[in-house]
Length: 189
Image (cartoon, rainbow, N blue to C red; front, side, top):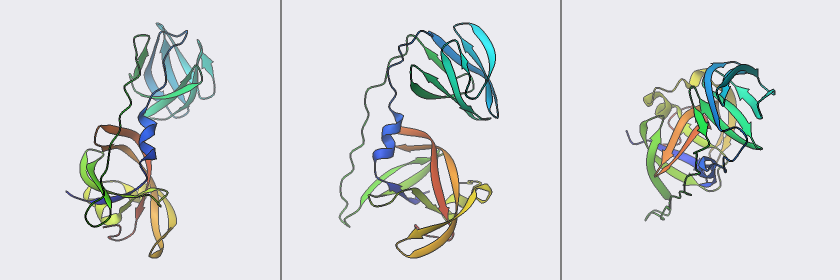
């Protein structure tokens, strides 16, 4: 399915880079997730930790049924259930994607949204990832349960929903939990 999505610059892709994992804690694992809490295992010791609390040098920033955000040495990381950080962790090499100007004067790329193929149009003046209602429906996104919004586009005001995409991939870059707008109708195409 070749859907076109507007993406706010390429800067959002920088979010996939991780910081150095040096810390007093050698191994961190999320073994259970709850709204506002998670069971963290730090160097073999387990505890239910509420958001904002510290356990063995690890702060649980937030948690829901999908992931926990932990802070270690001032660096935040998002961990899914049984997601781990270990002392053998090394930061991945910086990854970049180069886009060339198409003959029509646009920057385009292919990729995926939640595993569904997508064709991306990069609008350097946009502030959000945006998809049409038709595209979201074709990807089986539950957009109607998102927060209702009104967006201002080049074509005027349009109703829509603010949602969170589980995963957006362009080239070798994958970003998890991407905020996006689903706009009523068939635009953006």
